[in-house]
Length: 250
Ligand code: NDP
Image 1 (cartoon, helix red, strand yellow):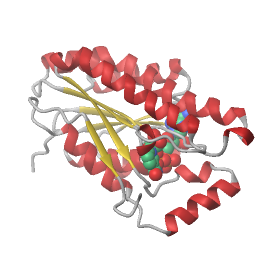
Image 2 (cartoon, helix red, strand yellow):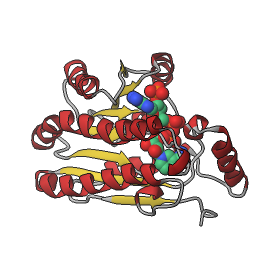
Image 3 (cartoon, protein in one colour):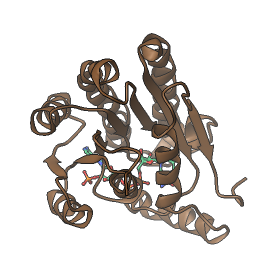
Image 4 (cartoon, helix red, strand yellow):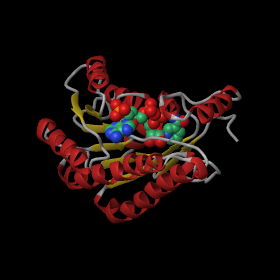
């Protein structure tokens, strides 16, 4: 059966688990050739075998701008083009400012902001070219932000900063390139089952686990479906933003 993304190449950062992994699977099911980027090569290799076909595995740490940019260059070299970029890699290291290890703040800025900037910067010329020359005549950048990119809360200040930040960057970039049919969108998930909370310090992780017990959270596949919806619209239609919360999340 023909997929809606047949002939396209899609790069997903943070494809080794959670939302990125589910999104890669969903895009592949629509016919896209996948470029899987993250640090855990073994996970990416396993995913590539699951997806089948000609998925490309690239081990890279997106906090290093040179590595993120090299990943994009390698993707284009191997796959010949780039139509879709999903800026998904992220970390959420919550906790009050007063007791936070400063290294956690630096890590959030490095992954959630530098990673998005470096990947997008390197991808942009290829996306503009795809939108101009490819049969689909449209290209997509989707960044996985968060409800935390819309509402700031105590204990989440730096995570909020990074997600508000990528929201601002996306909107400005959208205005710059939308007339050339590069769509720049944001998906803002609420609480979703993934490995995101495994990196929290113990008391904060426990509080988050308790929060998860009081509601039915989203599945990573719910977010993957939203991404697929965005990137499979006709070229006349740009879905700029999707905020998706568990129904029970206040
Ligand atoms: P996971 O922890 O399951 O996935 C995070 C992914 O990011 C992993 O694949 C990880 O791969 C990758 N990653 C982390 N650091 C780096 C790095 N330095 N370089 C390259 N890749 C990196 O969490 P989620 O799937 O939940 O997170 C995906 C996105 O969704 C994040 O941006 C997060 O902020 C956002 N989000 C998640 C929500 C949730 O409740 N789960 C809610 C709102 C937003 P590896 O370790 O192999 O490098």
